[in-house]
Length: 107
Length: 116
Image 1 (cartoon, rainbow over the protein chains, first blue to last red):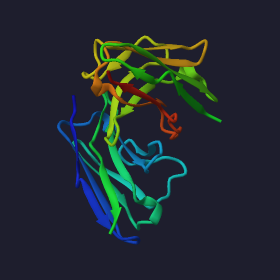
Image 2 (tube, rainbow over the protein chains, first blue to last red):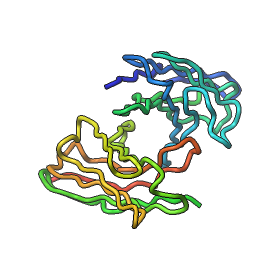
Image 3 (cartoon, rainbow over the protein chains, first blue to last red):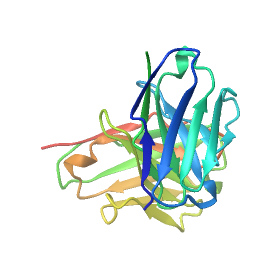
Image 4 (cartoon, each protein chain N blue to C red):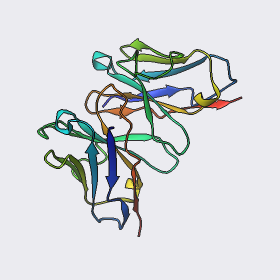
């Protein structure tokens, strides 16, 4: 199975700053089947990005995904107060796996 | 409106069994792979199992292989997860999810607690 390692574990930033979250795979992710989810406390995870770089309809364009092979990045260009949450990457080849998550907290 | 509604969670003893259900509406259920994901209290997300639209292909995480069985009834638009030989570490909220790129919200989840 593909192991996904997210870094950092916790990222402390201020609103308006740029956030860069990393997801590294133990082997190449087939067809860039890499997604990013956002989860706020007490809420269900929400899909933000699929195919490594395609944004789900309705997701603000400050969220962007990039990368291929084994290294992927989620970038939030200018943090809004509602963006502070936990972010998970997932590869959706089979079997699927999630990263352990990055907590984005207010500095 | 697409809706996914899980049920069947509850308290089970170690070694016991439960069957989770996920009732789907608002889309052509049989056209989509469906997935179960779980989240232990205070922990991250763990993919559990997926099943193709026809039900002919299934996949399992190693942690549940041989104990859990995913199935679906396309005539009832319902996804199932049969859980046997439950362990304390299976305690989690179990979510059902529809595959696809449209960002369909997951269900609200059903809590499974395994404890003696």
